[in-house]
Length: 102
Image (cartoon, rainbow, N blue to C red; front, side, top):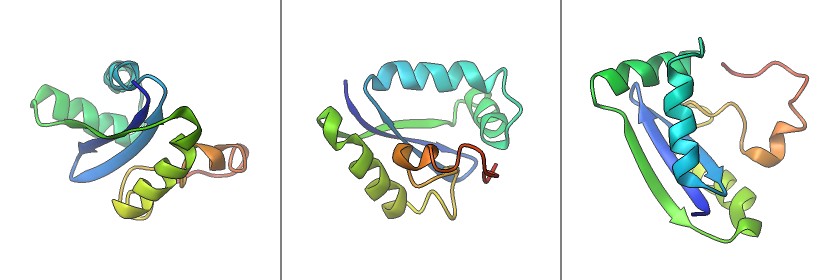
């Protein structure tokens, strides 16, 4: 399933775009137990407490992913007051060698 998803953990949102949303959810759950980032530490805690929220925001075409991801990151304010480190996948290349938010 192609689309945009949201993970709520630690009172903050993370917005993601995926060509396989179910696999992305599973990857985030696995990473929660191995990563040391603040996002994954929070997610691990919420998974243990059964309070993590995984939601599909919208289903879309593959070519719409980047623009919709940016739109929902801004709508949910997950860059400035959430877990997103960029405004979306299309910005990851520009920030590859620069400091990220978390």
